[in-house]
View 1 (cartoon, rainbow, N blue to C red):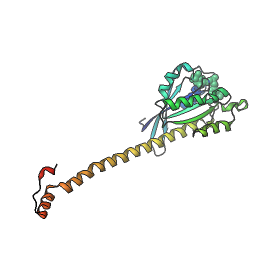
View 2 (cartoon, rainbow, N blue to C red):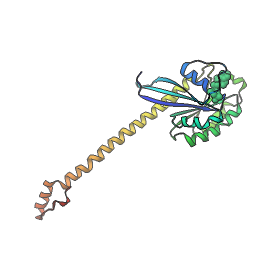
View 3 (cartoon, protein in one colour):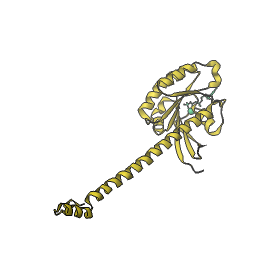
View 4 (tube, rainbow, N blue to C red):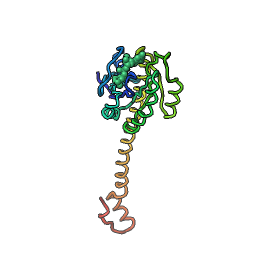
Length: 223
Ligand SMILES: Nc1nc2c(ncn2[C@@H]2O[C@H](COP(=O)(O)OP(=O)(O)OP(=O)(O)O)[C@@H](O)[C@H]2O)c(=O)[nH]1
Ligand SMILES: [Mg+2]
């Protein structure tokens, strides 16, 4: 299927928070109980029809949470349009480690990247370790949004993913408009001095000027 945009969404966060499960839910709408740990990076593609008829192809990069892969995974979120920073709502440590992940994102990801704090395993809310309000407060302090979802039950996964893609698409459209505007301005700037030169230095006018003043006009100022 032809597409208008190619976006990258990276899933990052501690090991076992459910990044791979989330990617499979987003890309194939499936869930495997007890997945295996990711070694390096894994990918899936998803196509999204946008409002207005445009089509976005989204490359979802599922990165390894293990520390030993950090250098490799950074190279992927460097190119991301959006980052889903995942923690497990039943695992306090995975939430506390968000601070380190955020620092990493600020250091290595593009400034324009859209970051969403994602609390996974919302189906286990009876074993919740992180109150929803704490996550919202943490995200708001950083100017980010926070959502809770469940890769297992699929609750809120599709909504979150589509909201992210639509937001990146809106940004891409704004950027395109800025480029078009700047191209138009460049064209105007290029044509404006030429007009002025024609007006001031056109040989016919110079002859006229010379005639009016009665002085001869040198052609050396003509270019
Ligand atoms: N109850 C529940 N379990 C989940 C959910 N998502 C993932 N899991 C389970 O959590 C475990 C870890 O999931 P993974 O997706 O492998 O975790 P990961 O973040 O990719 O881990 P790394 O690849 O090591 O970084 C697996 O046993 C999953 O079945 C969820 O939404 N609810
Ligand atoms: Mg994984």
